[in-house]
Image (cartoon, rainbow, N blue to C red; front, side, top):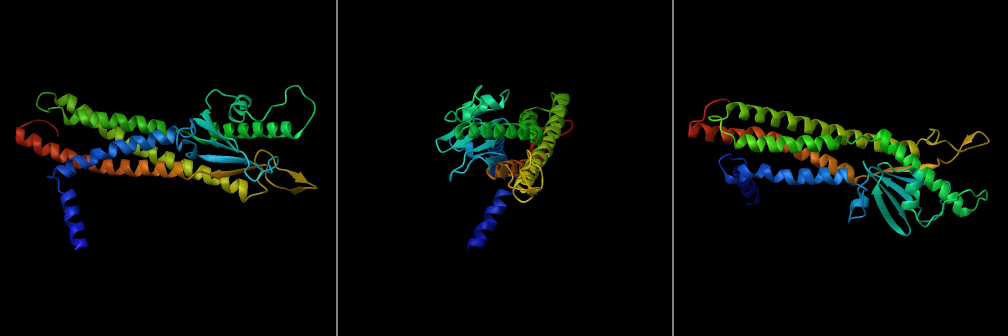
Length: 280
């Protein structure tokens, strides 16, 4: 009984003449835009779940011996400071490591013109160095191609919707331009989405592997004693939630792009029935 029901539903869904098939691709637009927005706004605020969406998180292995060590998480445009006192996130654009250290970890006092070295000042210096490394990795290793992907996808959807509402009989040139813009934009958005998701995943996993499994690889300097490479000063772990969101966005874009010719086929049938002329 269950297989027969699934077969009937599949036939209903993929039948071009049904209202369900005609509207189904449009339901993909909202989640695609939402996944793009969540990916790009990762670590920019302390809104629910936002601090858990990150590219990588960094720990200080040398100056942090607590059971719950402080950590720094980065997104494409944001940065989070996680400590026992809670989470603080903000945009990292135009910020220095020192100012971010004060904002993200206000409970850690920074030594100013003080030659003495105590536990607090040592931890503060280590925290500033940790944030500096995070900023370097954010700006030099993670390119926000999802920004361009989201813009192109929005342009493609708007152009396609306008194309569907344009008559070839009265505005053939406008309809032709809108159709081509929609196709090129959606194709470019899918390509950039795939490139961004793949690059972010490989970069994050490579950094994690380098900091955990390659102790002889220099990452922000190696700690040596008697010529022996010791513990890495910084440990990096890749974020999984952001990767999942990016791959979901890409997958839904592929489905939507595959549905575009079928939606055009429905428009072609309607155009033929109404006697429209020109390329459809």
